[in-house]
Length: 119
Image (cartoon, rainbow, N blue to C red; front, side, top):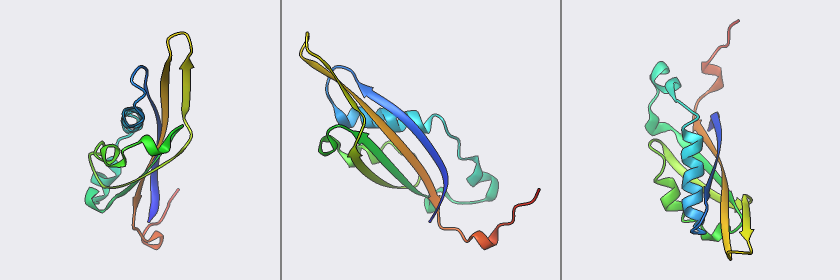
């Protein structure tokens, strides 16, 4: 698999301390920065695309990867959650705002020898 596209995003849950919600919002942010016209232009199928999603949050075990994977409109999702992101604590109100980061990679099994770059 060769990575063709990499997009990044951030998302948050300001009041509910919901790490999955923040992760989904980070994925949506990344997706809104991208358009996969490459597939249509080259006659490639979205079904052949593997989408690797890496989510960074302070509590990785609190993210439901199935729900995050369901955010992707195309491709075969592989979701990994790692320690990252940011928790912002409000001691006065005893709340925590969760900030998640996402990296979304679109990958295809292509042979580089089938392509030629020209100037």
